[in-house]
Image (cartoon, rainbow, N blue to C red; front, side):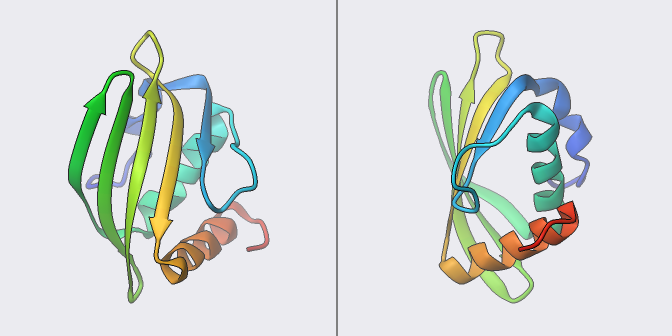
Length: 116
């Protein structure tokens, strides 16, 4: 999905009431349409994205990744919770360093047509 930069491939695997939590937001946001919009922006702006490690403790997946936003390298973790039907019900994203998070947040907010 990330390599193809086509987030629509993921949509069937995301529950309708899915939420996304990120240091960009004060509280988790949803539903699926919003989660998909955020993921679309992330795939549009991440460069050199790759997962480096994974931990599975069903129904939770922890995926460590590295990426770049312009000249800023970042590391992060996707904490994904799966529902009984195997679809994603929640994703919590942790990103560091702060300047990488800020660069990503600016691009996502501009892409969504909101103020950074």
